[in-house]
Image (tube, rainbow, N blue to C red; front, side):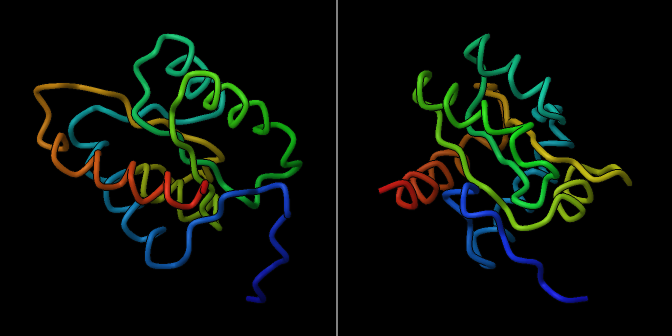
Length: 128
């Protein structure tokens, strides 16, 4: 399978190592019920102010269907990142379908509390 050209609008794009870390945290977020899958759900978490960070798939077709999310995320001061594959994002979300966007939601009593700030910092470094 050839790696397709990633849309330049998909910025910031996580490198392979960061993408693995993101998928890992997403899988854990599924277990703790801290994940909202899909562009609409991600939009809702941003509007409600419960999103820790947003993960989007750089290979969404057309990419424009999720490009409102970075704008909204910037308004709400929520870090966001693109990962290369919607298929891998779907797998990390625990579903068989491709997922083009998801949001990790905040929960103070969660076991992810320690990992989320580290990942947020890593994502914010990409934006600089």
